[in-house]
Length: 130
Image 1 (cartoon, helix red, strand yellow):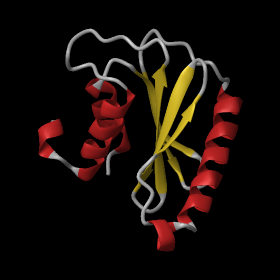
Image 2 (image 1 turned 180 degrees about the horizontal axis):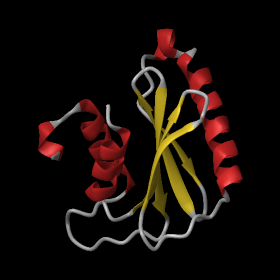
Image 3 (image 1 turned 60 degrees about the vertical axis):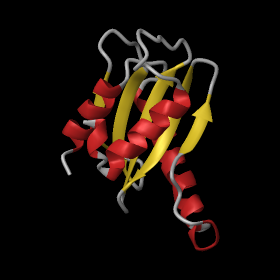
Image 4 (image 1 turned 90 degrees about the horizontal axis):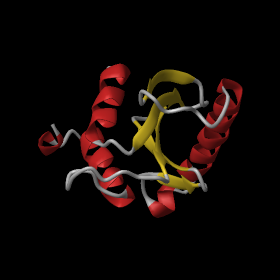
């Protein structure tokens, strides 16, 4: 899987997506895409620590798989942004950050739930998300 192409496709899917990252199951960054003109709230070290915590939480969720099934995504909402974490295969995670100051420029620029559904479709290989 080409992570750079995947992240570009996700970034192109909605103007409200600020940042997207692929990390391995330990939270180590493998690919990054950042919307031009957007300033990060966290330093590089703070982002790395946050990804490691999220990866650890995702590993804990996997322990529930026999009873609850596969995890689809997890949402962490903050005052300034929302981060959505998606499993990406068995060994990677996809992190997508949305700003809380969402901009709807036309009917295609949807809210959080529609963005989640669109990203899930991209990850599932849905041809209608091309």
